[in-house]
Image (cartoon, rainbow, N blue to C red; front, side, top):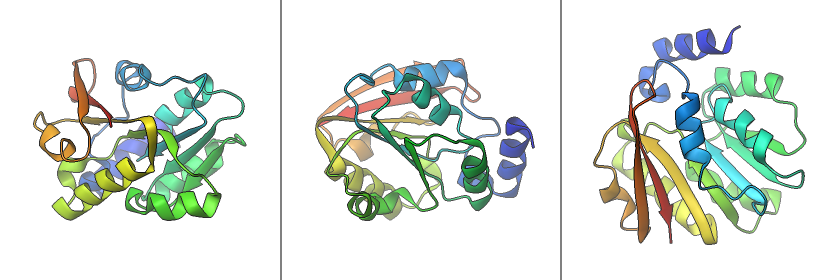
Length: 185
């Protein structure tokens, strides 16, 4: 099945889980990945990998020795990723980002350099939002970054409790337009 059709049909089945009718635009993907130092990044985690649009761009830019962990809770999208992304650097995980620490321990990864999120936080419970943010902060190395995008503007209030350095960028060329948040310790 075509990537866009798969994404759209999955959205129709569960719009709160997917959060958008179409995958991220190339403009959004580029904005999300601008802050990533791909030459030195050893461990990159992606939350809500969907059909792999951001994953594929990470793979194009990442060094040969990098490891990329992709979290996708939707079984249909997880199976699509497993079939369509064949790269030894990638581990695709059918689980929630809340469980990142357990998976890092299982894989022998001490800390990560970047976490890039496509999760629709506005559709998550308060507890799940805070758990994902706090667990991500715990897993980042000292210079690590948590990069997320959201369709609503006031997401900083959830981030300030865990991150002291937060910058934003509005991306108009995406459906729908969104705000990218780059969070550091």
